[in-house]
Image (cartoon, rainbow, N blue to C red; front, side, top):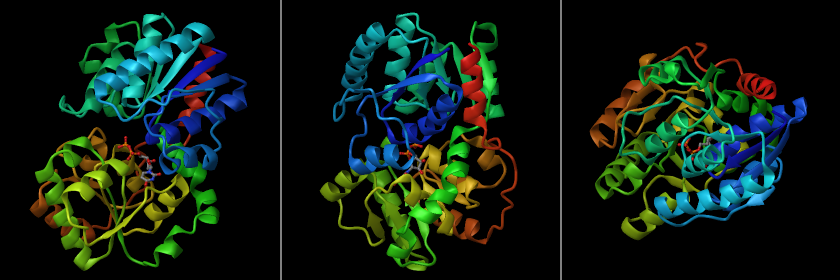
Amino acid sequence: MKNIITIVGARPQFVKAATLSRQFQLLGINEKIIHTGQHYDTNMSDVFFSEMEIPKPAFQLDINGVSHGAMTGRMLEGIESILMQEKPDGVLVFGDTNSTLAGALAAAKLHIPVIHVEAGLRSFNMAMPEEINRILTDRISNVLFCPTDSAIKNLEKEGFSNMPIKIIKNGDVMQDAAMFYAEKATSKSDIVNKLGKNNFVLATIHRQENTDNPENLKNIIEGLELINKQIPVVVPMHPRTRNILIQNYKTPEFTIIDPVGYFDMIMLLKSCEMVITDSGGVQKEAFFFGKNCITLREETEWVELVENGYNTLVGSNKDKLIAAFQLMNLKNNDFSLDLYGKGNAAKMAAEEILKL
Ligand code: UDP
């Protein structure tokens, strides 16, 4: 394949796309990016394109701020008309957002091969919009690049081995990004200095099951406030979480900052004592940067982190969060285990794509 259309829309996809775009340029694959507009603020979108040197999107759809159905429907229509005009050899989608599903569906209906990077992951929680998006996307894709052995196993259990779908384990492209940008981040980011804190816990909260459930959010906020009494907690806060907090709660006692760019995030991950998060990507990044992690969810797609003791799941239970914090604080883990590849996942995927 020489002509690829890549669909991105949300923050984690910019990080993943950066790794593939660089490899496409090295291999002479022509890539045009469609940005659906799901995330659009400067600090949720633009900063990633500039810092990570992602090619400027050829198409901007500006679809955001509407319900899941409306968003996916409008994206489907917008992407379809671009694909009809561009006629690419393949469409590349990442992860599990509405942009992923809309891109895959538009391409599949036009019989354009769909390539899904970060395929095969399952939380087995169908209440998560992400789980619906990833299952449907995998099913209508032609090529699935899987980051882990458990992702491959999930697909096998669902009968994918009997389908005309190419399944390849290539490792995790987020590992590539962490390795590639770590040095640059050190020279470019001043965030730790600006924060003025030597010891801190880094936390992020944005998952719908936490932000949209007042009881869950209250428990998490109170748990983080208790931890903050022992060690400062720093939260780069997702705009949707911040809006909900402003409307429903007093200002929390821990430190809230605006969402940060990727370089700042790398430096926060490198410098913190521990990570508390409900993000998929940040759970892995804690591991990449040698930090124990507590996950504010009942389940995770990244099971190998839990199985190997790097991550503890506490849901939104305040007592469990505090207990896990005390436990993880004492844990001296060895982070040298190879769980996500050696930083060449994007190279492997791009070389395969060129051969298709
Ligand atoms: N991230 C960032 N700044 C922040 C919070 C997250 O750069 O303020 C990065 C993070 O390092 C990771 C990606 O955004 O690379 C993860 O995105 P997010 O947590 O929004 O999505 P998820 O991984 O849960 O799908």
